[in-house]
Amino acid sequence: MTIRSMPGNSSQTQPTMTYPTKEQHARWKEEAKQMDMSLSGFIQAMTEAGLKKFDVDVEPDESVSELRRQRNDLKHELDRTRDRVAKLEHQLQTREREAIKAFVQENPGVELGDIIQEMIETTSDRVPKQVEGLVTVGELQYEDGEYYFNDEIK
Image (cartoon, rainbow, N blue to C red):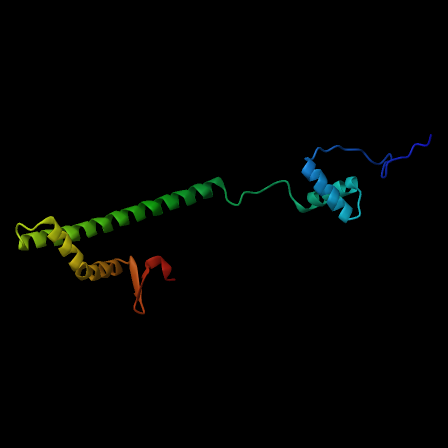
């Protein structure tokens, strides 16, 4: 009986086992076939290629202190934005209240439907003042006849 040695089997090699999924094994086998390689040669070549291309030590993009600083900056920005929105909402409510109060004062005994109708009809009178106020405080910018949110113009 003649004993054939495995290809690459010598005193210089060491067999190693791996347990890929069936899908991985089929994919590796197909790739090896396309490269005209044995499956063990393919696995060995791909392992070596992977070791050459990738460094095991991964450096984080940013340190924990840098991430903490960024988080704090974003939290402050959020707080400032919330305060700004609250102030604008208050201004709007105040102006709307003032408009309602003025209308009722001029029309004692007026019904709710009439108040609503007045607010609808006079919105176009109040909106330019609101927009002008937003431009004045820097919330909006006016350029070439168009309005933009302040962050949109660079």
